Image (cartoon, helix red, strand yellow):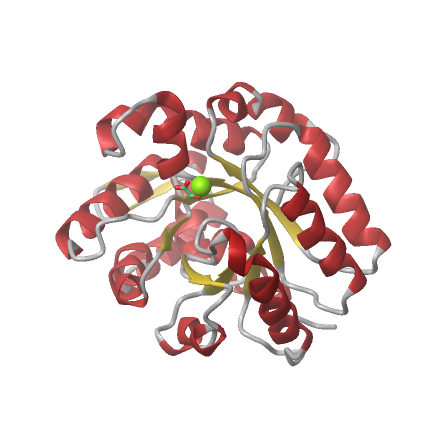
Length: 290
Ligand code: GLV
Ligand code: MG
């Protein structure tokens, strides 16, 4: 199956919308509001009594996707729990092939390796995303990013992390953890997705946090409400001026050392320019040709 994901790198997917697995009528909403990725959630957005029903709806939806479907991720329950193991078995037995499989409460490279291997054995190209949301996961970051089988991305879960640490779910208390995640992921070239912003009525707070998280190095921000997507896309999409400047920098860089405006262009500046174009979704082949 050729999925939309294969034309877009995970690094360029900016907005990820969580949708409860019980709300099949809302699965199409992610595409409607221009979220880059639909996340169907079987974990915390689903009550224990509704787990089976949500699993059934999610797999039914995923099995019916066309080859050019909107990028789609499935968050199962943690595979070290009974319900998570049931989710995984059901996925492996089905013909469903989400682009990404999000593993909550990931605390070791072993789980990522095991699940990735099972997915390959089942003939699926689904890539694993590790949700980093416990103190133990932070302690295992080097192991997770240094393993032979690596996740496609790390996703930071602020709500569970706060609960695990006894910290407030606010920017400052979690800044060190966010920075650790970004730094460790960068050692392996792994994408980093930031936690949703939980106050859905506070658009300004969402904007501030999305800017701060992009400034730290996060590639994307998750959302728990469709109304949050426009702000996330606006903040994380490079402007036409930024793209034009990045292109100019790369032209100068190919010619040697020079300047764009008042900025000296060296390899470090060129690396940042490549990131801007990657965030703008401009494929690498086009960079070479430009
Ligand atoms: C997400 O799962 C979170 O805990 O914030
Ligand atoms: Mg969580």
